[in-house]
Length: 177
Image (tube, rainbow, N blue to C red):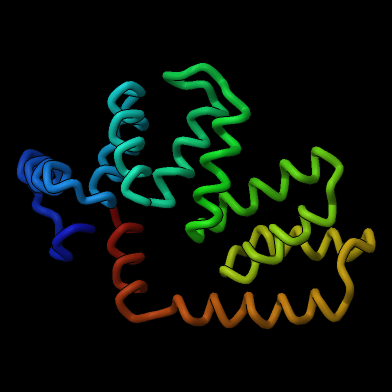
């Protein structure tokens, strides 16, 4: 269970009850979790409600999910301005995929200097996709060899920091499911 750090019950109703207890306590992680589940189930109104509350409480992933909702236009009208707002909030909160997406937006807008800065930050957070994209920008001359090497070292350090026996056990558990 992501909230109580116990193995989830085999009874789905017990798990939902625990989730809703955390939601009632305004736990931003629980609000984001339930909001994301609602989104996966196609209940975009509820998803938007839970994710908005989690974002108001400072959850970076909720901001990212809201950015995706505004990009896709699921349950709301597509809104580039709101999408960008939520991606920026998520990126400021340390969300690596939001940072990577901002790089793509900047690249589409023709600002490769800002795009590269976003990619470097995301790669420094350990995001492999941004590191790979930086290799491509190096080939086209938008990043120096020295900056690329420094980013690669920081990227590897971030990846190494996330390795743990507990994460390996959790990964094995979820892969079996």
